[in-house]
Every structure is written in C-alpha cells, then in structure tokens.
Image (tube, rainbow, N blue to C red):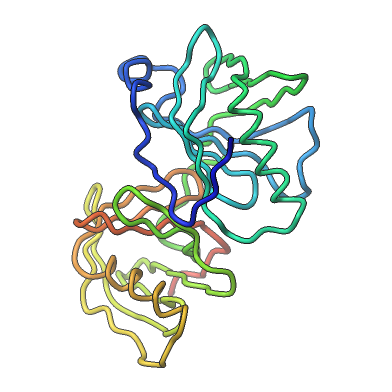
Length: 254
C-alpha cells in the first residue's frame, strides 16, 4: 500500500539491513530503465536507487521510498511512502503502478551493470546509471533544486518555485534561492564544498521563502556533496540538504 506524505521517511532499514549490508548486489547503486513491457508516460523513465536496506524510486513525478531486501531472488519492498508533489493524472497513475509492482515482490536478476525486474506479466530492464548516464560535472550545468531534505525526511519543492545554482570554473556560484537572486564563492575538496560570501537580494517572498531559507542554509559554510549521473546532493552538517538535477550547460567564462 502506497502511503502519500509530504515528508517521506528515508531511514527505513529495519530487518532488511541484514540482507543488504555487505552483500554486494544492487546495494549502493542507481539504475535507470531502458525498456519496459508496460509503456511509460512519454518523456519519463524509472530510476531505482538502492542503499543499505532501502530503495528509492521515481518515474517522472514523486520520489517514493521503502525498506528493501532480496529474498529468494525476489526484491521485497515494504513500508512504502511518497512525497506529495502534484502530478498530472497519467504520472500519478504511473507512480501508483510502480509502487504496486515493487511491493508485489518482482523477481530480480542482476548481471554486471544490467538489472531486470519481472513480475505480474511485466518486465522492466535497467542499466546502471554510471553506464547509461556518466556523472555530470559540477561546473557548467544549471542545477535545479527539486528535493529538500531535513535529516531523515525529504520533500519536493512546491510547484511554481524554481531554485537553481550554477558553478563556474573561477570559483563563483550564482543562481536563485527560489525568489531572490544569489551570488557567492566556493572551493571544492574531495567530498565537500565550502561556500563563502554568499549574498542574495532582499525581495519579500511567500511560499518561495521557505525554500529559499533552506537553500541559503545549505550554502552557509561547508556542505558534503555527491554527484551521481545527473544528480547533485548537498548536505549541511546538521542534515539539511538539497537534491538538484543537472540542466543545460552554462558557458564558462573565457
């Protein structure tokens, strides 16, 4: 059963941990759908993100997550919850179908970078994200914020609010927190980005202001960062974080 909540728990490990930890397989990997016997909404694809005892998945609208384990060659998913971003009826129905398909315990076959899920007459073939879509570079793309993280919970950016960041090769970061323009500087270490002198304009904001507060909070000081395929994750020391998607590239200054 798919439970829809505005903030969805991401720490659902439970007893699944013993089946995931140290077992290799899909854990710690991201897979992107390449084909499916059930047609998807045009312009969408399925993304599966496996972590220790958990799986997160998207199919063009909400981010859905649940506890996960592999039992007898089948993927067993439970305690499923979803963000509550508004979707058109076709994508909303696709979210429901995907959650139901995964909760039904499809057979899982993994061969190198290729993963197949099959059950109930439906077959979905995936390839590992790093193969299908090499990691984007930090510098160049316009990174759009689509997910707000607060510790163990995650939620979508409200419809109509657009926050984005662009990093340049000369150490500058520019963009918008969702309402006001922002600018600052940054330096990169192996797994962290340190932001300095970040400032923004001071236009009054309503709903966008709540998003902007989180964006600016993450851009104060040092944040952990990770790029996986076209996704950037920024996480502040207190667990506040941002999920961003790479868009069009911005020309670097000459």
